[in-house]
Length: 494
Image 1: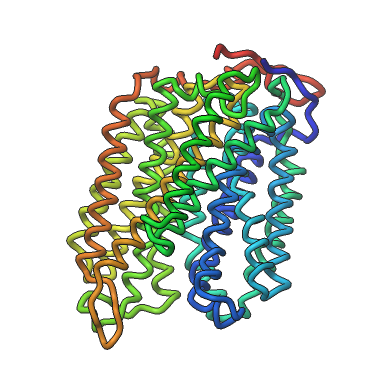
Image 2: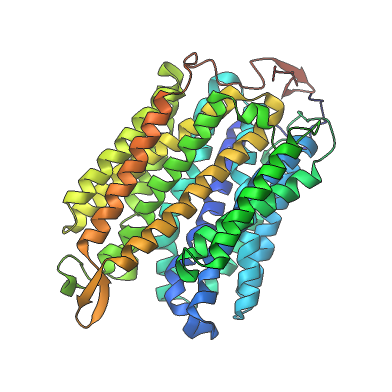
């Protein structure tokens, strides 16, 4: 059930799309800016390398937990309100990182930054509620692509800042931009008139949080602890048990945290599985490209590139993602988002085949990485359209949050897989251990395999009507009130 709520901001849909996309890019950048800094954290803070690795791990954990939870809260209490709160958390986290060099404070700040990734599914939900049907696909495609765009832009930006400024500067800048985002949202983004009635499922949120934390801790730390260690296996077992108990509870609640009956529909379930596989395939590109070109020439394949040059290798992919998001929307409008996602998965697989055979030339490495990014752009644009096609309008935030969560889980599994492969296949180059060329090529094959699995899953999706079956909440029904266009809240069948 949905119920109207009063709007709280001027309706500027054209500006709203740009503002929300900018917010998405900024939040996605926050997830990656610390990566080039990781090798230097022990020296800068006195922390151990294991503690330093938590600057990445903790954002993954909090992002995974808060994305579906805040999506559900937004559906119930106001999407713009929750989006602004998420950006506020980002600002607080950035300031904490900017004012301290203590590893505990930095980890806390990074945890808060990770929680802000919920901005992306919340923005998608606002666009679905506010825009006329003919504009929803292109706007949602752009908003979803910001996840990949930010990841591609974050590394070179961070590298430039680290090499030219004091390292706290990037956190001051991120805090200032986050504050700007809040002001822009309050000025140009209207509050959605749609609400989901009912009581927030606090026990469901706690159960989901516990299961995710156990799973992701085991996946991200298993390499260091040992995959057969008591701690790793215990966490995996706990994740399974908690998930089963949580699922049984969710099926009995009137307003569950995650509507498992809706999530079990083939259109939604297969889309989320595809999202996990696409997240895995995409993240390998980000993880290995910069490291590979930085390997010393003594390895026989490394290029000895600088931190800035290695980061810039991903920038053309970010540009391609911006350019291709409207293309994906047009493909989805004409042929359906299923076709877009299938095409994207095939392009990603081709990109990794290119990377497998072109690992000695900087320009060919960039070309292969850009092909993968292009496929990711189309995939990330198509996934929300498929989700919206399969869920009621009142559950858009929670459903897109769950889909974003599946991408994050895929990235976590990819990170663990890449770390294991590169650590196990090494040789001595110039007196130090380095991954073999075969290790990188194996990563490319695994990522290509994930993309092909995503293609197979996509082909199993039920067919939908091209261009019209996107589940847009407005469905073209608008009314004029005081010179402002508002979406009529309507109920879609579950």
